[in-house]
Amino acid sequence: WLTRIARVRLFLGRILATAGWDGCVRIFDMKMKWRTVLRPLAALRYHEESLHCVGFSPCGKYLAAGGNDGKISLWDVYN
Image 1: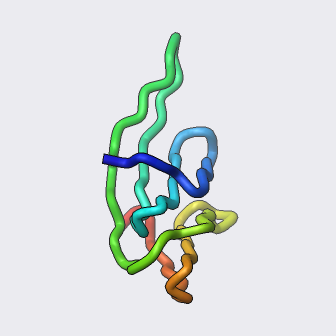
Image 2: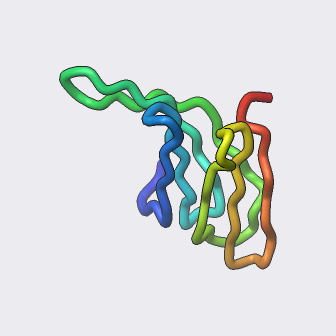
């Protein structure tokens, strides 16, 4: 499914976003109890080449990603 991850970002210790070499941004809900459990929430596909950055806005509502295709994507995380 996902062999390599380019970047990982965490918002408020709960929502995890990854920028993959496959050009896909994946968002997970992260629960930490006696072990960390990741629940997939979304796979955002827009980029045609590998991604090398991902980041949340300060309020956590938006997620931006940039890749080798020269594009920047901006996503509303909660809609």
